[in-house]
Length: 197
Image 1 (cartoon, rainbow, N blue to C red):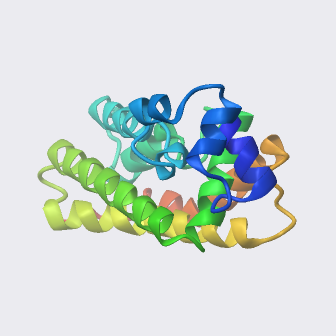
Image 2 (cartoon, rainbow, N blue to C red):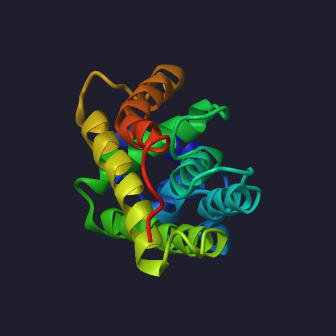
């Protein structure tokens, strides 16, 4: 994506919509036909990821506990480790989003809003799937705890200068390792905890 290369080379705030449109060989009016703002370029396919998580919850397996279903849903959404390797562009966009969110309020706000909307929908679906184990507050708390833990860990990961956005495969490996470590307590607890009521 032309915008990603421009953000990496010249900085997010320094890159204008006109720069992006020129690099993509389109007019600025054409750009705005597809994107409401520059920030939107850092949040591709959010709805697709939420749909993938919802589909994973809907296809829960017999005997699966809420935490297990939630972790599988997040894997399906690409927000935690799993079978689906993200491509190099997705890794670069994720790294840019994390870096820019620390310094650009509009991006930080967009990231927080996108995460909140996604968490609400995932929690709603989890409550629907497990109405006798999780009430609405319990479902929201579980989703918030898991997603918050992963988000916090990844924020620290992206702040470390040795994690270059130029190496998508290595970055994805570090994301996988970090999220696996953060989620381990929940994974271990699924075999021993009583249902949340």
